[in-house]
Image 1 (cartoon, rainbow, N blue to C red):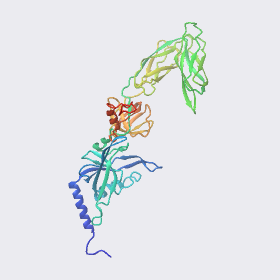
Image 2 (cartoon, one colour; image 1 turned 180 degrees about the vertical axis):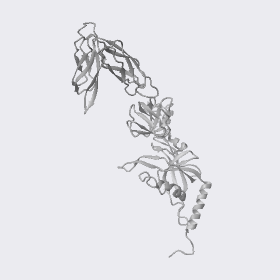
Image 3 (tube, rainbow, N blue to C red; image 1 turned 45 degrees about the vertical axis):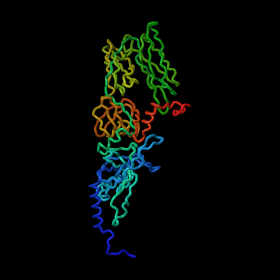
Image 4 (cartoon, rainbow, N blue to C red; image 1 turned 90 degrees about the vertical axis):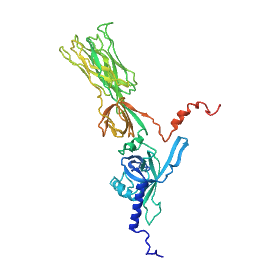
Length: 467
């Protein structure tokens, strides 16, 4: 049987009036919350799960708090992971306000970022200003109240307290963005803050080795071999035997000897070049010969570091002034950086002792790093110049040079420059990143364990008894 045509079941005018009345009630009795849509950054193609997401937009909406007598849910409960917060919040928002104010902006976003743009979506965030808390939408009810005058006018958002999992939260609202400042997997990056150029002096003499030639690089080495020289014969008992170190390289899965650096050129070899023996290191086949400083001429014997400096995250150059006597045979040297955390100059080796020096030459050591500039901004993206790794700034301490970052896509490379994409700040990484675990306020097991250690002895088999 047809409905009575003389009674309206909800004309457009009546529905518009109902929507306007509801909107007015929300503006009078509601709370202004911030609606933050979730954007997809990366989705697993196997399980179709979100691997990374971001929240970088915000929309102010009036919402009526349905749980007016307090938060819903289970509240604070004890689990095997510690104390867990299970607060819930239910709010109603205007359907028309969402479709007119938020949906058009979401429709303009790329389809691979926003899956549903016509209604509120599970996974989006709601910032509740009265409790200063972030809630995640778990379910959207669109049929309560149930078709008044033949239409639905509100969305009911059932929300749970948001548990942060390294998502990007960059809404531009400081009150919201700083809620996750101390959450997630945070890594401390130590930047170069100070640089002190090293200094060195040279010792010259006659009858030394001028240069070592690597005739065969060998193969199969697992560690640097030992390099030994035969003793000088021209001045028996009064000469000094040359010393050197070897440096390995690996090419096509074959480890061989790459360089032989002189640490001391020796004294008293005259016109007879020493025999060079390469032993140890697990490899075979390497062989080397050497040339001598011309008779009667002075060349480098050794280079002594007088100030190791700091901040040499990259290998500095070493310049040696030219000899003053003919023939002027230039000397060259190679520096290595030490292993200490301050990155000092470790040693300077002789590549070519040169010849023709009347007095010790001047040794000039270049800078291995430069002090950075600028101040990193909270939540901005920083990118490594070599690794191209991206991360988000959590905190920057200009006094200690420690940059705390989160949401890394890989591992930063030692010595590369880390540049802020908004601030333009750039510093050189002086030490590999170290993870610093922060306490998650959703899981307070660390706090509980720390407090329990003051009265429970967990070294016992039964810390609650006497056996």
